[in-house]
Image 1 (tube, rainbow, N blue to C red):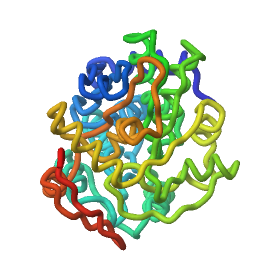
Image 2: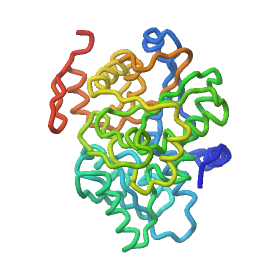
Image 3: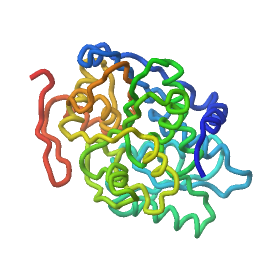
Image 4: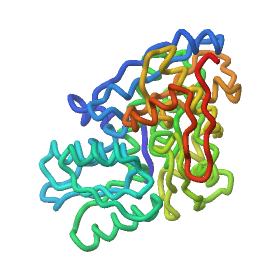
Length: 334
């Protein structure tokens, strides 16, 4: 089982009119900092405010007739996408999430008409509950990353990026369970194998990064992060996103909570955009010097579904509690 460029083109047809192409725009500030064009793929413009809509719609719309409903585990945005797609198709959706998921994301999913099940303290706990629902109630599980239709849907982002800018030298992709990174890498490498595709994630609880380093899926402790959408494991029986990321990514890079905070502030104060911490890890890698572009570089601003109270505190330079640690505040420009 794998995902091909043909699968991604087929996904684009399925998504037409529901999760269409988003803007791919330059950041003048980041371009000046990097010395090369830095372009941002604005998935914040999707109807649910996040890229996850693409994979969810492609998976749900390709299910056979007569399904009892769908379920999934989610850190927020995938659940929102599945809820949206299920509502469009007129079927039941049950979204399973851990206690670490911000309330704003839970509320957003309920607002779309889905049932929400909060369980445990990790993505693995949520996945176990989702699979119990499959066995007990006959629901179809839509994996947030280890599903060929989901990966193909996310891959349409990479296809749009390379079509809009064939001169890209690098794509910086937020990395969690690997559905986005795998899809983007397959699309971009199929069109131009010379483009580097790098997965970027936070430095605590980075499951795919640790799994690639180990050569097999590993468990990691899930901890609070500004990039909460990147939390969770990849599944110990991962069949698809792990091998695709292992084989197609040119590398993975870790960024700190301080790097993420700084990038969120840059995106807001310089580009006037509100985005989740997970959205800015590509910018964080450039700003921190962990990536040094040698040509045009694209990154994906993956979502805007965040706790606005925390966002205001970050922008005001206040301290932020992240579980067992406090992220010291820093006022932008100070």
